[in-house]
Length: 341
Length: 172
View 1 (cartoon, rainbow over the protein chains, first blue to last red):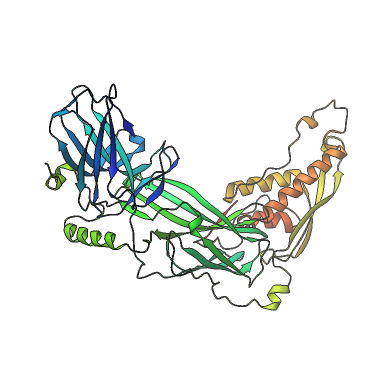
View 2: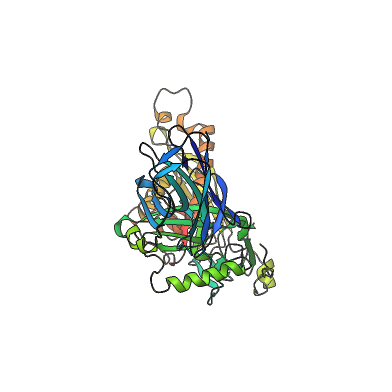
């Protein structure tokens, strides 16, 4: 989003210092379009410059101050205009005065905490939520400010879970259909493969085919106001035809082909995104028999870059003991972190 | 951005299938035919009955073969019983054809051959859909309809076998 002031006399650009080397990641925006943004991780420094280009070099630009902000915000779709900033950092770039020529102002937000992953909710019209991060440069003026924003994308990384047991269960309808299903893990990373099997112990109905669905469930609100939004991300047929007792059907589902995010549990105590595998059997009369099972998805880091891990190590030292995931930081609490020139 | 290790996608171990299971008859055989419509009675007290023949190897049915005579109102009774007692969405019956029962028609009304054939097909579809449903198989009314000589309208409704076990869902 960017707004230009009345009578654009100045063009504002935000440029990152590491724009060449920094990776970009795709992210779906509110209107469903996929765009690429610069990718940041928790603890990384955000540094660059704000460049002002005067359209008419002879015309001076009077202003009431120039600043740059780094914002992390939660937006509740159903309550438009209800933004909550969980990260808010400010750097003043210039005191009130005049700009007589095009110039650039350097800025650096050191080891910025980015606790949540960027997320765009499923159903923009209803009770969905989005987490977003952006830089905002503002030239304050008497009548209207000149504002330029730059969205960025944040990913949260995890490491291989220590405990990752398989899921194995026997389910069925008495005297009618008994199966044993097994998935090799309970926690999968976003480029993982679900390896499993379905073993038929008893088949007294006429099965036509079997599929496995990946379901994403967004949960907003707490207590009596809990609202779930389900979305079937994938439907993958694993068997066509009628099985008999003793048959074993293999499952091999590659997750990299689907649009998935990590499992988010109780963010801000108000919001969750969870994933479920739904095993569905359909019989000849189109009756559906299903078994749903939650799986935890996590994001695996790429080959670790030394600079990133160094910064992340510093960040963890600095923030240890002061915040925990899920805690909300209001701008007033962050005032110590703001450096004013 | 590539993994140095390739994901392990080998199949999970499973028991080899017994040959008798693999080549034996499937345990889900269920066939119901509706045929041989016959109109009985005279004048205004006429009605049509159909033969309902069932063959199955499902253990939930007491008889592996049965043959009974039923009329349209018996099917309606079955539909009402299942709608009231079981949790399933009962499929529709072929129409009641009230218009055909009005006087001064040019044809035979509800005893017209083509109409009886249409109704027979509809009833066959209806009973096959119901009898294959695991929740309907639990109801006494279905067993009485399919396998007992006469329907006792004063019977005590109930479940003939145990309910579905938890941790599973059957959705019609």
